[in-house]
Length: 184
Ligand code: SF4
Ligand code: SF4
Image (cartoon, rainbow, N blue to C red):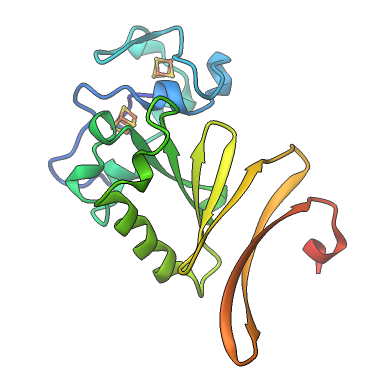
């Protein structure tokens, strides 16, 4: 979804999509029936959108975290890093979508240090930090990385903190959406 002109988002000065088209592959775009992990049929890879003037609102309104957030350094440019930062789930999840062709890109430095830093900063808030490689979900906690694997449609990621033996510990688990504990 190579779009930099979302109405409500202020872009980081000097940043733009350039030759990047990675969101047209890594993200699901329902309005053009493009599944996650496959190039949209309208994408000229590394060039832009072949139907730019008529692209759907889902594409027009999208800007990735690199464009919007100065907290992500220049090294996060998606065309080079092969990762896209997206604030998902109404802002409650900082997702790092990784190109399955480079599944370990998030483990490399300085990316991994950044991701851990974001996990530490958000640990006491309700924001989750999740690395997505295809259907695999890895929750990044301050002191561990929890691979939750594939999420079924009716499953949700639950994160939080508990005190055990006087020590505060972060956790991440999968839970069915209808689990009464989620309604509490
Ligand atoms: S319609 Fe264009 S902008 Fe939208 S996903 Fe497809 S190639 Fe990207
Ligand atoms: S991933 Fe970001 S920089 Fe790349 S095309 Fe999409 S919005 Fe632009």
